[in-house]
Image 1 (cartoon, rainbow over the protein chains, first blue to last red):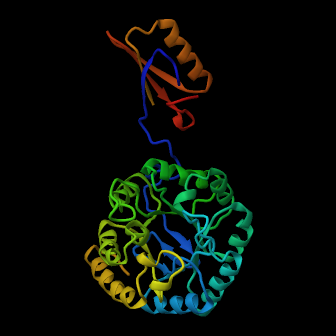
Image 2 (cartoon, each protein chain N blue to C red):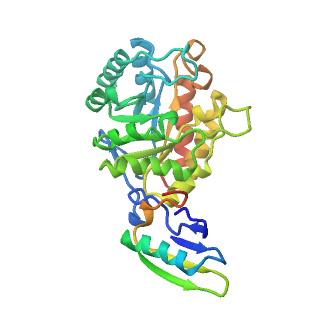
Image 3 (cartoon, rainbow over the protein chains, first blue to last red):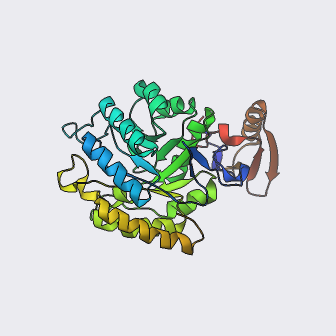
Length: 284
Length: 53
């Protein structure tokens, strides 16, 4: 389409098909080990940023379950900005997550960094997360598309809504339609918060696509005291779920302690969220 | 997808673009105005890249 005699080329339709609401008017509901994401119920994924010890993971899992979380998160492989930061426990961390699942019955969500551990993830993980930094790792997306596992696709830190949905399209084009999108803040000029939470993206995705979209206020703000307010706002704009970092001892967390809620504050927040959900006709 | 040709684009150049798209299986809806021609491309244009090949 590059030709000196062309003034401009205009797209009438979006370049994505499988993720497009025009071809699939009803909301997609993704089943994650029995937990339905994208339906009437707003689902909450909670847990520590990274898996550190057995006591920590199992303790937090039990606590967030009591508070009403329906899935548990925990990073075993961590994509850190610095190579000298804690990189995660790796596969032993995955074993601890499995123990936490056995103890609590909560399905587990954890991030995949490379396709070389894909078989283990397919066997052991209920919802495979693709982090913001890998949103455009197309070879990884294609491999995930060949599985039938639910995928949580985080928005890249400088990705447009269309680029983000096109990444979902990569997974879906290979045959896996179980994709959940996650807004986690984008990079702007503002430095007060870690990123800027783009809640308008939730509305945009809902209009353009039938895929469920959830919000991660913890990574978006990077400040624990903002998380409750942003979580309530996310439910109010129509997010299908939340991903919230909860740590039993944030001051000593090996990763992102500043954005983690203590279990008591998380429990309080869950009660507040129920109120918002009721107002907009959803359940929690 | 819609292609707007430059006002001074020769007819031969426009026809080359149309032939190229028809070879890919698209139908072309041509509209010629007094200033410029507009090509309406009918078909699954998701395979086309507006910014390159």
